Length: 214
Length: 232
Image (cartoon, rainbow over the protein chains, first blue to last red):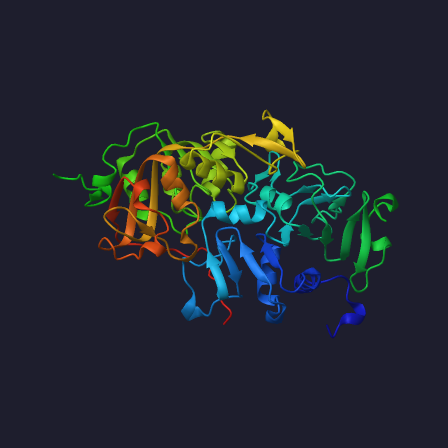
């Protein structure tokens, strides 16, 4: 943070903190695989957020100590976790019932592309890479608020916030907010509304056509 | 009057009647809660042309990936293949015909098979490749018609079990296992700890034994942690 004068964009930790600010105290939250798992360590306890992992646990509380880690206590990213007071375990059908039934307030997912209508693509690149959708297709329809966390541009420099997703969709019109290393955006009437820009970032630096931005 | 016991001495005895071409559910999320002994036994038996139904079909070269390495699996129904290079490779070469199912739909289809539900509508997958060729009906939003998913056999692992097949799972090792136990014709359970009838308090039985056909004491558990992350 001391180098903020010439800082350009947010680090992954700062992106996680930007997401955490969106989560209401006392709510339930599901975290997707990849970048979103960083939120586990950074979530302040005093927010009393019940973190859900779709493999069957509600009440994730950070990471275990070396001595207390258990091979049967993991999150959906297959990482070891700790649980807090009030935690519970359940089977996968109950876990997805919580999601589908609208009992989970927020979910944070990784993404490959998000378009201005709130369509999300995050599970396959035809002919190249298939990871599978895991729980993402259920989550995007079940959680009350869907937040996508992704790097703003691909390694080739292409913006991942697009007019229309080219990759196979995970869900149609499901995304509410997007956090990238360059800013925080809301999907608003078919456009990306800039809610916050990261330090050193200007609208021009987003690399997005003006008609995409509200 | 004698009652036939469900208790078998080991994996080989409990899996005596497997044949080529069976459909096989296997519990576990990644490598958490996988039936290690039953998988090792199926590797040893070498049966072929298996339709494997499991969330990940193994991971990191372990679990059901041991069957993939021996080309024992020809069909796979799963939700996530990231972290399973053996499956990704065999999907691309066409050696394994894989069907990817949204994880909640996967769980619910298995649950439906065990619970006698003939079909259900879910929003998951609407407007995506998953909905192709399926009936989509508009409720509050478009929903996809999905059908139950059953299997000839389920192999599952529990921390504790009794001779009737009442089971208790540890932490997040429960995942798909109780659902699969309900959905298969023959459910074969291995336990880390076989306990006497009544030792699991009735309130704490996670899966009632009526869903279990065979049970045995497992051994030599590796209980691998895929990604150990600690705070210290």
